[in-house]
Length: 220
Image 1 (cartoon, rainbow, N blue to C red):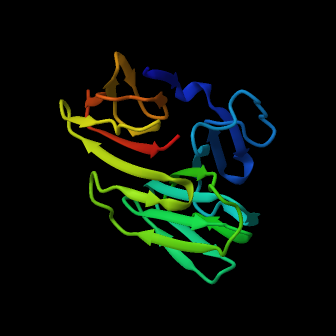
Image 2 (cartoon, one colour):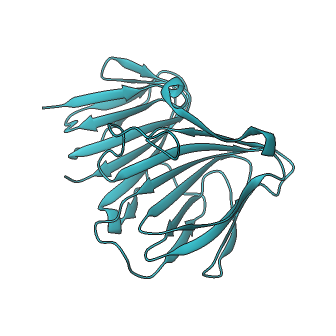
C-alpha cells in the first residue's frame, strides 16, 4: 500500500553559523537537533541545504561509513579531501564522496557569488572499505546515477510546466524539491519540500511550474 509523508521546507531544522556566512537547513535529525523519530528514510540519513556566502565554508572535518552525494543549486563549490582530490562542483554536476573507513574534506565557496548546494548522506549496506570519489559533470536530465554501496539510485528531473515524470517503482522513494513546484498525489511541493514514499507504484509527478527535483530510488 502506498504511503506518502510530506515534509515542508519550513519544518526543517536550522543550523550552520550565520555570522560566518553559513546557513544550513536539515531535513533529518542532525547535530543538536536530535529527533529519534526522524533519523532516516530508506538509506537516506541526511538531506541538508547549505548556503555559503562568498569566502565562507566548512574547514577540514572527518566522515566515515557514509555515501555523500552533492548537488549544487547555484554558485560553485570547492572540494578538497584527504585522498588528494581537489575539484570545483558546478550546477548540474553530481559529486559523490564515499567516506568508507574514514576520510577528511574541506568544502568552501571560493567564488564571488553566493553558493547553495544540497548534500545528501546515505548509509552503506556494509561499513568500512576504501574511500573513493567521483564527479559527473553536467549530468543529463533523467539520467540515473547509481550509489551501489547504499543500494540506491538518484534520478534528476527538470520538468517544464505540465510535463510529467514517473516516480520510480521501489520500496522507498525520497523526493526533494530543488526549485519550482510539482503536483504529487494531490499535494503541491515547492522549493525545499520533500516527500517520503513507500511503494509508490503507478505514481507521477507533474510540473505545475518549471521545476527541478531529486528522487532517490531505494530497495527495502
